[in-house]
Image 1 (spheres, rainbow, N blue to C red):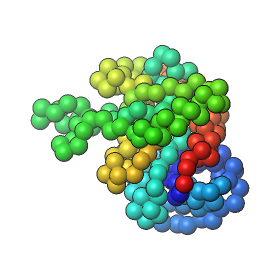
Image 2 (cartoon, rainbow, N blue to C red):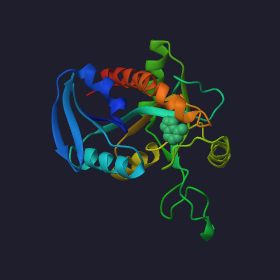
Image 3 (cartoon, protein in one colour):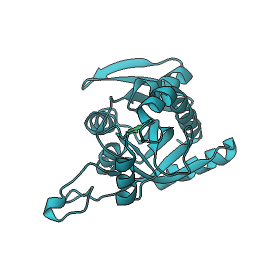
Image 4 (tube, rainbow, N blue to C red):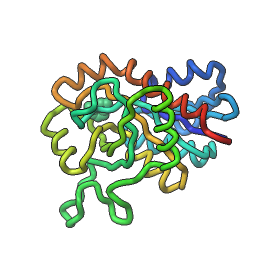
Length: 230
Ligand code: ADE
C-alpha cells in the first residue's frame, strides 16, 4: 500500500526517516518528499512547514500527485485536557479549525458554509491505534484536536478553545490536513504527542520537548504502519 506520513516540522519526521534508513527524494510544489520501502509498504514522507496553508498543500500533493491510499500525521501538540501531560499521546477523533470566525453572519465558530465544524478521522485507523497501544502498553488518549494558525501560549485563549470546541489538544495543521483528506476521500489519522500545555510556559516547553515528544509519536506511527494490511 502507498502510505503518506506527514509532519509539520523536520523534527517530526526525522525519526521516521532514520527508521526507514534508505530513501529517495523528490521535490514538488515547494516541498521535499522522501520515498521509501518499509516492509511491504511504499511510504511517502514529508514535513510541510508550519500552519494550515502549508500543510494543506503537502497533504493535497500526497493525495493527488503521489496517489497515497492512506495518510498518517505524526507530530506534537499543546495539551488542553488536564489529563494530558507532556509526552502523552493523543489521537484525534475529530478536528476543527479554531481560528475560523464568520460569526458576524450567524455561523458558529469554526464553521465554513458547505463544510462542517468537525471532521472525523478514519475509524479503522483509530481501531488499529488502540490495538497498537494495548500491545505496546502505552496509554493512548482520544479526543478533539483544534487547529489554528496560532501558537497558543495563553491560558485565556486555551480556555476559550476548550469551551468553544470541547477540544482536548491544539496544534497548527491537523484540521487543514483533515479537510484535504476528507475532500479527496483518503482515510487519515492524526497523532500528536504533547510538547506543552499551551499556557504561559508553552514557548519554553515546546523548545524543550519538541524532539522527545516527536519521537514518541513517530515510534507509534511506525508501529501502526507495520501492522497495516495490503
Ligand atoms: N503545537 C505544539 N504546541 C502548540 C501550541 N501551544 N500552539 C499551537 N501549536 C502547537
